[in-house]
Image 1 (cartoon, rainbow, N blue to C red):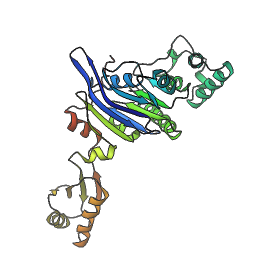
Image 2: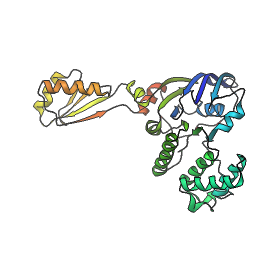
Image 3: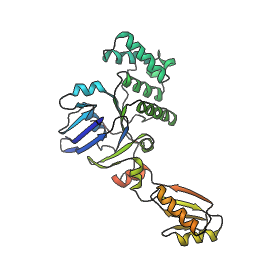
Image 4: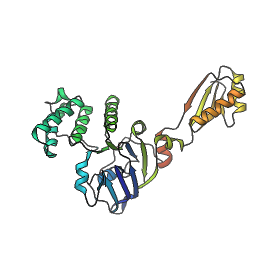
Length: 314
């Protein structure tokens, strides 16, 4: 059974169509990343699947609970960390976690045990008695995610979870996400950092104009975009010329003594090139593989480069 399934989800605000019939299948214990330009409907999708917004049409099930007939079951099974922190800055870090424990109706002793466990897990024990207003951005984001985990959710929606974080805090958050997935949690991730999706996601879907325009693993999507090549380096011009003569469609650089050979980045294509050079006894000094990244995929599919601005929640 999928952790998340959706069929024909539609949502409009007046004449503006935000979602135009999207289908989703998210396997349990994986990271599924939804990408798209600002305003593409990523946050609307999260809000629908987390029961915050009612779709105009379509069906969905999350953690085995039907969106229309059992929204309470979905709410009990999920966690949501939105674009904007849900941390109460007037309470201490520990008090924020205890508040969430009370909202989940945990017994007092169990709530305190859970709060202490999460403070330790997220390396916030020393700051437990301090107000989040004194925390760094990375600490507040970790507390926000810790609050999401109080209820031990099976599915977690992370909407732009690392926006505004420094590189070190982002990588800390990545490690936390990997640990959660290793423990069987399903992560539904939206992000404007395409390297984040590349690092974390088992599958990626690209949303544009209210429709899903592509879906696959990061590697599969990158292979769909032209521009990948092998960069072969040579020690002398004679070897460079011989290589250019036996490798069709290659482009040489006489000054750098390099040859660019188009490739889809697969191991098979690499072997083919090396086998040709070996059969012709052409010595290669060094080799690097250049493949399109997800930003190239994003631009190819949507016509936009990713932007730092956050999508406005509706």
